[in-house]
Length: 295
Image (cartoon, rainbow, N blue to C red; front, top):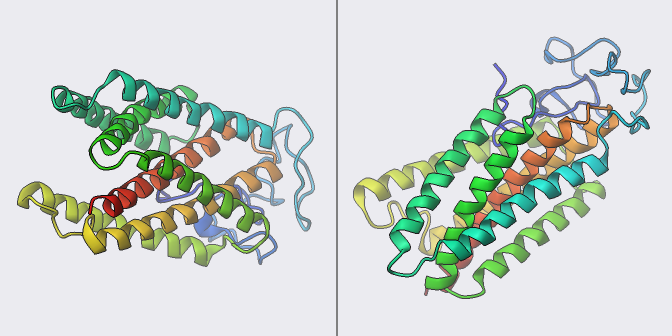
C-alpha cells in the first residue's frame, strides 16, 4: 500500500503515467512506466482527463499549464504556501512573546511547546494519509508547529547564543533559493533513482535519531552522541542536505501538478509539503548552529 506521508512519500503528479508517487514516476522526458508498475496510471496519460479543468491530448508531448481558472496554478501554490508559512511565523512570534523562557517560566513554556509539537505531529500524520487536502487541518498544524518553534527558538536564543535564530532563518532561505535555482536549471533531476536514494537516506536518518533519543531518555546525557559534538555537526549537515533533497521532490510535485491541471485544492497539499520541509531544514540549522555556538 502506498504511503501518503509527505515526509516519506511525495505524492506527485506524474507527467508519464498519471497521478502517482515518485517511486513510480521517472523525470519528465524519461521513459514511461508500465501501467502494472503504476496503479494510478490512466488511459491517455492524463489523470485529470475527466476533469473539465484539465487539458486534453497530452500524451506524447510535454503538458502545458492549463489556462482555466479551476486548475491549480503557481499563484495558488504561492498563496497557499504564504498562508501556511505565515501562520507558522505568526504563532512562533506570539509564543516567543507570550511564553517566556526565563527560569521561572521555562518548565511551563516547555510543556506547552512539547504538547503543541506532539499535536502538530499527529495532525500532520492525519493529513499525510488523507486522500484530499484539508485546509483547516493544515492550518491547525501550522499554528501548533509555530508554537513549538517559537518556544524552542526563544530558548536557543536566550541560553545558547543571540542571533542563532536569524542565522537559521537565513540559512533556510538560502537552501530554498539554491535548490530552486538548481532545479529550474536542470542540475537536479528527480527520477526514480533520486527518489529511492532520498527515501532510504531519510529513513535511516530518522531511525538513528529515534534510537539516539531513546538512549537519551533512558540513559541520560547525549545518548549515542548523534546530536552533540562532532557527530552532531555531521548529522546536522546530513539533515540539511536531506531537507534540500525533499525540496526538490516538492518542486517536482508542484511542477507536474500545474502541468497536468490538478484541481486547485491540491495547492494546499503542495503548501503542506513545502512547509514540512522548510520546518525540517530550519530545525536542522538551529540544531547545527546551537552546537557550533555552545563551545
